[in-house]
Amino acid sequence: MDGRLQSPAPTAPAGLSRRAQRFVETEGLRVHRQDLRLYHDAWIEHGVPAAEIERATAFQDRWGGLALPPSAFYEGGPRILDADCPEETPGGGWAFPVGDCRVSMAYSFEVGPDGAFGINADRWTPLHASADGWVESLALAAHARRAAATVTRITRGDVDALDLSAFDPVPEVQGVTDSWWRGNDSLIAVYRGEAVGLDAPQCLEAHVYEGLGEWGPHGG
Image (tube, rainbow, N blue to C red; front, side):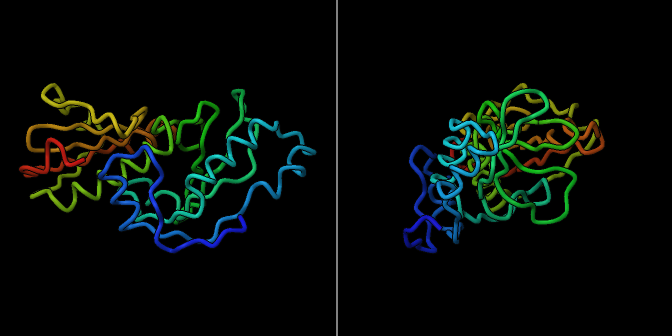
């Protein structure tokens, strides 16, 4: 425990869009979080670099103990954002887990050597350039579900056939493997993480939210 009383109503960290701030504060829940500083000396003795412990601790201070509604993909994502001991990755650098899965999955959720938020399965696959981008994507999906007149699920090769020429990428989600696209009256979420990370093209999926009206082009 970090020694400070935690209100169950979280305060959104600085730097998020207004939409994500509202999402965290109205739909999130703050629960008990472990204080990683208590493990600093033990992890140092096990060979974890101090800089990596500091990186995990910074994540924990920003996001630790935050429970958010489930993602529309990845079987909902981490149940509670919660950092743990960093581990060296086969490809070089260090990563740390960021919360247990809601159901049994073939991968874990981690923050990688470059700070990206992603999944570690057969290979490390960054989904968003930071955990902020992951939270922004959850907030945008919640916004789109509420505002859209129709939601269409597209899979496999039909995802690559989507014409995105009239759409702009949504920058706040910091998309890497996954991405969001904003059109005149619609939003499109493209989930490539499982297809790439598991070498499973059948897992490629997109969600098309249409009929957003005034809530489509901006909504932030």
